[in-house]
Amino acid sequence: MIKAGGYADATEFAIIEWTPTFSTGVTTMGVGTTATGWYTNRAGIITGQFYVVFAGSPVFASTIAMDLPVTADADGYQAVCGSWIFRDQAPSLYHYSGELGIWSGANNSVSFSGAWDGTAPRTRVTNGTPFTVAATDILSGNLSYRAGA
Image 1 (cartoon, rainbow, N blue to C red):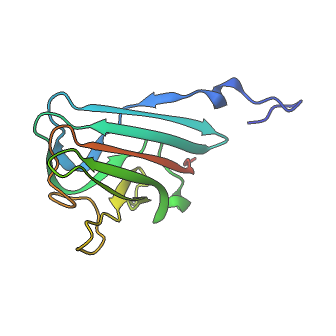
Image 2: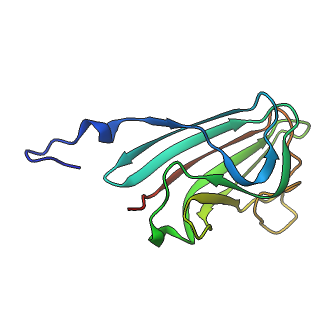
């Protein structure tokens, strides 16, 4: 928020750390998984990034959804709010990418849509799609959306 005289509140420039968690789909992230995220909240606009390196034996059971660091505004429902990339480290070394969408009616999580392997229709990231997740695979992305009241 801009204060009288044109100066912003110092907290609006703070980078806030958060640990990305999955509300659905990921039953086990794998022992040793590293999940980091950071965001800013400037005048109610959340802008952030996340980076997850899976370890051990991760297990995806269904379409995955990741919790947002701050609940989105109700007008954000059914909105695209960012992008993601998933790197299959072995054996193929492929990259998959798509959009992050706020598909939860509670406006508190995002789904990973648009995965494509060149042959199948675009789909959300789920168990075995676009590939079977294993140790050292990397999921990262960025997001921007309006925070809820």
